[in-house]
Image (cartoon, rainbow, N blue to C red; front, top):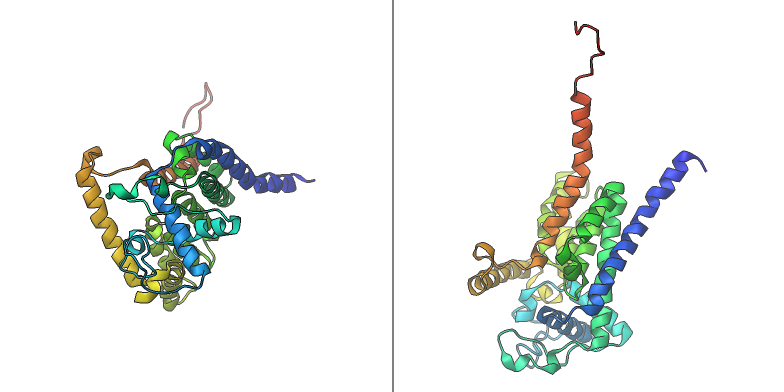
Amino acid sequence: MNVGGLSFVRKGSLPFVAFALTFIVLVPSAMSLPQHGDERCWVWKAGYYVGKLAKMDFSKYGSDEYSDPGLTPNSYWAVEQPMGSHLLYGVIMKMARTEPPARPYSYDDATMQGPETAVPSSTLRLTRLVAVFCAALGLALITFRLGWGGLLGIGLFLAVPHVRGDLARAWAEGPLMLGFGLCAASWGSRWFAPACGLAAAFKLTALPLWPLAFWHGLGRSRLAHFLAVLAAAAVWSVLTPPSLFVGGLPLLIIQLLHRALAYASQSAQLDGPAGLFLPTRYLWPFELLFILAVVMLLPLLWRRLHQHSPLPVPDGKSKS
C-alpha cells in the first residue's frame, strides 16, 4: 500500500476511534448515575407520544391536561420542548418492549413524585445507552469532518468532568450531539438545512444553526436561501407532531417564549452564578465549540507566525 493510501486508511479510521472512545468513556456514567427528575419527564413523554402515534391516535385532546394531554399544542408537554429526542427514545422503547413510567413526574406537585413516576431500571439502561450511542455517533461525525484535530479536541472535551454525566443521561443531550454531528458531516451539501432542522427538533439549543442554513442555502439563487430555512422548519415540524395543529413554526415561537419565561423563573428561584440558572448541560455545547476552535486554529496560527518570523543570520556575516 502506498503512503497516500495508508494516510487515507488512517484518517478514515479516526471516526471509529472517536466513536469507541466516547462509548467507553460514557457507559460507566450511564450505568451508575442515579435517576434525574428530567429523565423521568423525558422518558414518560417519549412513551406517551410514541404510544399514541403507534395506535394511530391523532386526537387533539386527551382526558387530562397533564397526564393525558393528547396532541394539543396548548399542553405543557407540547410547549416545554420539541419532540425529536422523545420520538427517538420512544421508538426504541417500543421496539424493545420496555415500559415508560406509569405516571408523569412533576417538580411542582408532590403527589406526582412517587415510585410510579420512576423510570423502570431496564428502560433507564436502554434509553441511556441510546443517548450514549447518539453522542458517540455525533462525535464520530465531527471527527469525520475535522480529522486529527477533531479527534484531539474530542478527547479533551470528554476529559471535562461534567460532560460524561451530561451526555450519558436519557434526555436531549445525546441526541443533540448527534444533531451537531450530522450538521458537521453535511456541511457543504443540500442536507445541511434538514440536518439543522433535525438538530433543533432534538433541542432548541441548535436553533442558532438556522442562520447558517439560510446563508448556505439549497442552491445559488436567492430563493434557495429561503427554501433552506423552510426545509429545516419542515423537518422540525414533522418531528414535533403537536405543531401540525398550528401550522408548524408558530409552536416554535411559543416554545421559545415558554423557555424564556421558564428560564427567568428558574433563575429567580435558584441561586446560580450571577443570578442565572446554569446547569452544566447548558454549557457543554460552548465548551465543545471552544475546544475544537482552539485545537483547529492553534496549528494555523503557529504556521502563520513561523512563516513571518525573520530568518536567522549566520554568525560572522553582515545583515546587509
